Length: 279
Length: 281
Image (tube, rainbow over all chains, first blue to last red; front, side, top):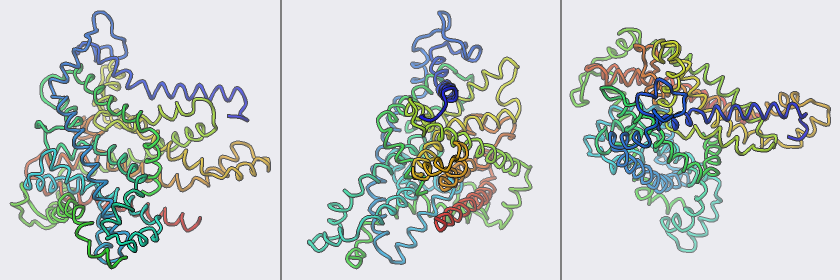
């Protein structure tokens, strides 16, 4: 901050530090309360746990058992990873075809897919979940098909934009060398798409991992439920609410996100910027 | 090359096309049809014309209330989120120590899902209101401001990242030229930086606006519309119409069509606004 006067510099730092504390505090408070007995949480939310309120990991055991959390974690991981892989694989193929051919078919398909980005989920939620039931897609494997179709808007748009920037000569050279379109795509084009594939994967991961309503309507609160469904299930159910279990579950839900952030911070930031500029 | 490629349309596009038809296209078309019908399971649909649309507005005022709540929320949250994010971006592009740490901290909440965010803040707001013998659902205004604070906490970091990218793209020569001409720091900010990052500002305004209109998870987890339906936003209102009352599925679908038209109109304005900017540059 060269050029800024010293008192101003100090003030800016104080402001930034205060803001950082405000940004971290909510998560820290939840973490603190996750170690308190369930009846002490609402009474004294801002107090540290003490000898009489501390319960160790009881809340965690409780929360995990009540919601079958480990299973939900497994489902979330499976659905997110598989959907993202399938999206990157198939949507990039479609985007390449659509961008490289100028037929009515590819134009109509492109605009329909882009249009789906604009439509709010409530418009299709009822009919889509009914259809998923009828076609037996209401399981972790079937929901991948739904995500492939519903995630197409963002990814076809971003892949398409990237393909336009690839010089046509590279693909034509491959064709002249005797590659058919399938070989050209997988040997030449797909490797070039790597940076945008990472961006798309990051953006779709952030969406699918946290998505609540779509998996709730398709999978329900059965043994197939994902983490957001488990959290909502614990809280939305009847009877007295177990605040302790809720605190523990919130912490457990945040941990994978923090790990993901720590591992891919640079790519996430890059993805956000690319996504925003394109969108 | 086009000619050779065209023959492979099935190989390249069918996986996406089939999934897209199942997940979006058919549900969308059937959805429009069902907004003119009475049904409980799709297959028992009976044509009722515009009845559902009339009911959407006449059966209580809850839909209009939700619309009004959403509009108020959108206006307040879009303004606060963007102003705070912009100034954070300005402070964090001056290359001071700890810049990366601050950016990391401010962005982190954005990755947490809406349901989890809702329950984090519900716990905190209820703790704050408890000494006054109130909760978040005592009065709709607590739900409103609670949601504004929650969304600021979630979105500021996201918008900040986009603004930082915009500010870093301003050519240094421009800033230096302003300095040479004797412009003060705030003059440079207002007369050079702000006009240069106008594209980022447009993007962020629309991102926050459509996000505010489509908000569902946070609304559901924080207050679930309580007290009564007074803190219910459009998306939650439609959800409750569908799944809350038997026999109102058609009305829910009609509301969803209206909702779609509103959101599509906003997106259309966005496309026009960004196109215009591109021409000017």
